Image (cartoon, rainbow, N blue to C red):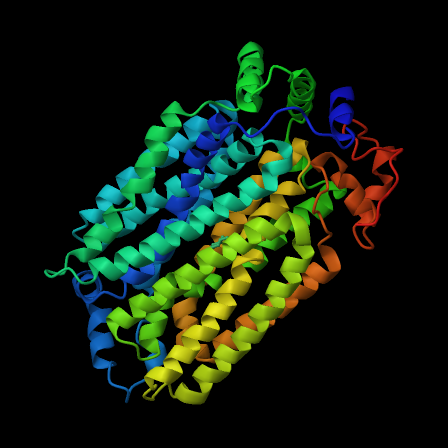
Length: 523
Ligand code: BGC
């Protein structure tokens, strides 16, 4: 099919236009989708470490924790409860299902309505959680929040990459991650504050305040312009051209418009992207869509993000000190993400992945050794304050390593390697795998800590080693490579080339994977 070939084999170029304030505002509003995700990540660990919350909803965990609070008992197991864990992780299971459904809403109704649906559902979840009277209300609330997160994660990524001028796509993508970290930090700070509210209802405020970013995205999405791509996809060609002029701030958009409409035709010609992405020629991209989010979660990052206060309590910190330590890791997370925003297009993806991996490996081994040396197998010990502070410091080194590597790149790389015709399906796979693994790690962590003890940190260290080798061997450098030229990256790769070199001759000549005449650069 000619349209597909014309688009995909387009040579490297930049379209006229600039980042207009209009687009910047639209992207800022959309990126609050990252903030609602981040807020959820950060909030649950804090409230589950608050006594009034625990005694009301999880009395058996509370009693066990009280009984175990002396240093004569096993610290590793004091929070191990499947219902408590379910409170945290139910959200991600709901988000998984929602992200798959969101793909259709995003395509048929437009990106902004997907964000709107996400925002409204999320608000309902906040209300249920803030007013919760029993565990069922809490979990139902989390499920609604999850649906909101699923819709937002699916549609916002698509929205941002369609609105952004091509050369700023990477930066704006990392901006989404920055919003996630801002949401996590806000949650940590709010937990620290609400914990001090006399009367023990602070947790309600923590849970209900998620309505603030949710309100922004709900109201904002109402006013957000639709992307030119989405308008075209829904047959509104004139509106699409007009919108493109507005978002690029120039009338000189014919070239980009031509490519967009060809691209839209090409993607319409692909009847079943879900089946297409399974074809041999898309094996490298499919591998990235599955393995990168899977491995991102096996760094163990959410052990810190969800359970930092609980973990710090396990290490013998007092309630307030635990929440403060979570604030510290939150600040480090945000600051280190900024490093990535400004370096990713200069030093490249691989350098950040490899450096971050080495740093996470070393710090996880160090945390495991420090915890093991004090708590040992029995989990019975008094940990001196200075020692616990050293553990927090090493954890910060670990968080920084994640925040400038696997954090943002875990979202950026799978999305930028996807060719247009399978991009929506690819993005859904990435979100779904991420949510599934987030659920699995959240669900497994407390029982694993109870059984594996300090060895759990070595377990994650081993995975970090595996993923660093994976990057070294299988992830090509994509810095500065226009999406249209991405096919050459695979053709030049020692392993992936076997899947793509014969593609130009493949019988399904409707989608050409690259420019036959372009020289294969070494990526
Ligand atoms: C991950 C989240 C994680 C967050 C931490 C994101 O990229 O997908 O699971 O909690 O980074 O900043």
